[in-house]
Length: 607
Ligand code: ASP
Image (tube, rainbow, N blue to C red; front, side, top):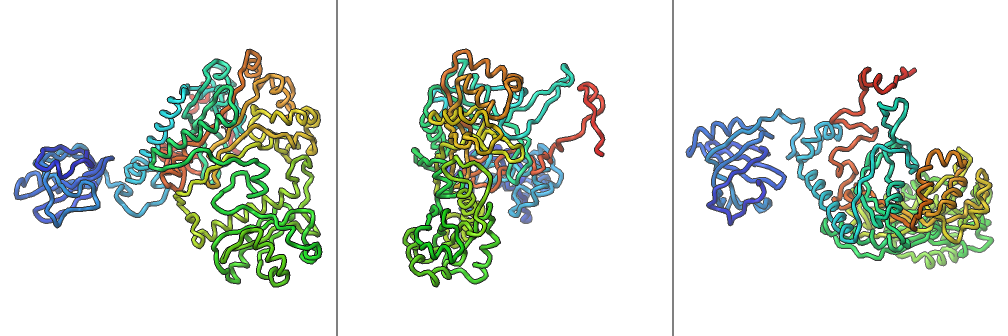
């Protein structure tokens, strides 16, 4: 192959096949850089040795596919290229065969400047020839293989589940596939194999995994794909810790496959704790947590500052930012998005001038060092955060408003001043400082203000915490009440987080039909509706279902991090745009009348 010849091969005969990466004419000497996925070798064609071949070589253009036949020769010392693995040798051609020509491509794989992404996606086959893409796809293969090998060694079977199936609730819309043989009926593409993997536990397979495509029709945000790949797994009789151990093991293997070393035994944190310390359920541990500095102020101070004394006062600390200019300080306010009445106090210096004792106490409590930036977020005394939402949670809605506003500001400031603190890069963060975390004990339900009802925060098959069964019982008849005790029910659900990115979610499942029925009820589903949508599953639960649980992690995201890529599209061979379009094959497209007729479908003209 084009990347394999070395000095020790000098004197051997060789045949190389690949693409013309570049051709350089130097009078009677003509050089062709020949490329395949393994690398590039320089081929030399000498007119003095073989005029006919030289003449043929002159017709070569970029991206022609050729075979070069000749002998391997050491390069002259002054022409050795130390930047190429094959840089000590060249192939002196005795013959050149043109296996195929190429039109002039819209861009070249060897171009150093990238063309716009639309062109790259339209001509994806050329784009994929680029070194960076070859590396990303190779990384993807290595990572997936390491995970498969690890899980297989742990006794997991890889088992396929159907793509043409029925709806699985994961919070998005379904992609539908019409049935021709049963007109008017539709399959749904799976948002996840959730019910199938649970049924595999009921079926006695004990440990299942699948590296599987999932489909979710969502309003696409910048870096989402309508079809994406999950590492999906399920096991019987687990404690959450058993699932975590498996995940830590396969992540370690996956990182190793990409040349990275990580430790297992990730730290763990309750959801409530994550909110209190970071204002978000996927904390980036590389930046310090918040400090509640309310007690550093006297009651009089708080009154003068018009701060609500019944709510936390959060100090956000961003290390090593240095002195901010007046303008930079003024820029903080517009970065702050208040979630219901929280206010930002961006000028810590001014607070220090007025309340030196409070400022000294805050510096101490928050661990402030020379050059650190401190910004305070608090509830305003006049119009503190108010919301009609549930009072049963440990973190009240009013507190949540402060934590969440501060959490977003903390991330925005850390991002904005990334160049100064150097904890991570602004973009294309290679994330070498891998800070993993398990976040656990999420709320089971989330209030949907639009629908005026409780929704499953994870999915409806997640088991409530054993200690909260009473709250479930108590709340199950007040499903349209935002003050219901349902608000306080915790789930045996967990997320694995890396540097502020959620890599995956899972849970211990409900294995008893009566509890599953209760959850459907709490979600506002009548028995009849539940039977209609999930009857087969509820029935399966009644035939000896062992306790079970599992998780799913996004493969695309993991590969993106390991390849140091900046978007999921860089690690998916044939991705879709933010508008869910495949620019290469041009999908989706209208279909012809006949196909529609066969399916019994007619299309309404857009009005
Ligand atoms: N089905 C879930 C998801 O796709 C993962 C799980 O609960 O195992 O997010």
